[in-house]
Length: 321
Image (cartoon, rainbow, N blue to C red; front, top):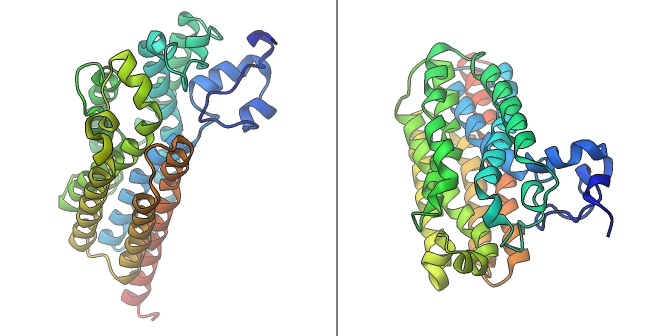
């Protein structure tokens, strides 16, 4: 077998063969990129989308033509850095558990591609990038962002003590729903809170789908997940979470004064969530991964609707339409 020192190790199960890290990245960098999940960018998208929704919803409420491009860029950089930092921290804490789980045993720390000191150094680098992004935001948004760090730090430990770690993940991954609004208005108002609550439900639903891949190993290792908690009733739990998500998002849009195009974006978002529930087979791990990843497309449809609505409302108010 080729040594991991040559960079040629089997990819983690959900990274997929032929991902860009394995194909193009220099061999010495591959373990670090794998640790940050750069070979699986879906997590960065799912962390970023609530930030972008919030920024776009704030643009509608503020009468702006489009979301602030600088904020969108900062949130994109921050999402990649903080998702990578969160994954690095997760793997540091879970390295012994990961060795016992089929899907995760090839992760850099579990497989020995990286040592603990190197992982901590890389974690510090990613956090430094995240802090630099945070300090580029308005003061109120900086304070709001700092408030999320405790949730991010404790999430990897939650599966050891609760059957619903997806709730904590939902809070951590949905914090961006507050950040965009806070950056525009220097406050957290009802639309942002409703968007945040809906996003927590969204994350709870899609991560319950994702967790179906690990439920047998999780049961053997002795950690909790909603896939194990709900078992054969997982489809119903996911459907209820998604219904709550769409309802709360609808209330957020109405509260912010969003119009028809935002509503159409929400409808498109809801249709993709419905298709996930309809197609779900909790015994098919490959399908569960495909459905989980489709949440990026659902989120981009909603974001596009919000952006189009901001543009339309601005055009109408300016008498152009």
